[in-house]
Amino acid sequence: AKETGGGRTVHFQPEMDAERQERNMLEIDLRRAIERREINVVYQPVVDAQTWRLVGVEALARWDREGHGPVSPDVFIPIAESTGLIDQLGLFVLRRACEMIAHWPDLRLSVNISPGQFRDPAFAVHVGAVFREAETDPARITLEMTEGYFIRNPDRARIALATLQQLGVKIALDDFGAGFSSVGYLRQFGFDRMKLDKSMVHALDRGGRAVEMLQATVALARALDIPVTAEGVETENQALALKVSGCDELQGYMFGKPMSAGEIDALYRGDRRP
Ligand code: C2E
Ligand code: CA
Ligand code: CA
Ligand code: CA
Image (tube, rainbow, N blue to C red):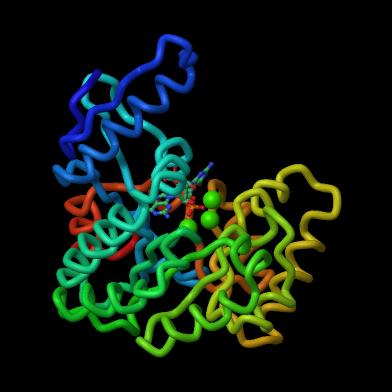
């Protein structure tokens, strides 16, 4: 048996297979890390596609698991989602990031939101409270969401999205082109921005019809007056093709990996070119 941070005791059954046991340990450690505020937030630069000037940052959660080293968000976010820890984790990231952008008055901030958080009827209330406490102008904030919840619960999703938009935040459809997302969703749900998935960007290097796909996708978004941010931009060729296609903003290792607030601060105070 093991004492958890919350004072609960978890009994490991002998028949519990190794994988499940490891997952349980991960959950226990994650819960404790969230309680102890040991989750870090890093910031990835977002630049204007024309000028490459820094215009914003995307906040990304990081967890350095004690005794184990860094755990990928692709591992701990799904655990947080399936255990309900995501509500706490997500608001923590939002709060921390809102406090940081107070230091960078002309940057916009993107924060990722999981469907699980969206389901909480009080979510918009919590978000509003974070803005008030951090004295954040909601107009500077974009919440990024993937399409899954919108496809599964279109009616509830539409209401939740509109409620958040009433706070003054923008909502982006994340990972566009990775799943089943269609330009139709953008309009149907009233998204404010499209985040073009890195798979579409990286496909540019493999030729085929990737450029045509990209151009058609961006043209549709633009026809709907929805700005486009491309993610995963790693090369100048990609950056050029994206600019020519009409993308508004670019994000990727070429302009900067996710970095500490201190490093963003240096960029911000420097010549504003990552
Ligand atoms: P995402 O929202 O699509 O974030 C973009 C991911 O692409 C990040 O991975 C980022 O580090 C990575 N990336 C950025 N530029 C490049 C590039 O040029 N090339 C390549 N190959 N990758 C690039 P990361 O930080 O590992 O996050 C993975 C996912 O975990 C995120 O995907 C997001 O869905 C989720 N996530 C991270 N932080 C949070 C959070 O605070 N809340 C929620 N709900 N999800 C989060
Ligand atoms: Ca994102
Ligand atoms: Ca994305
Ligand atoms: Ca993603």
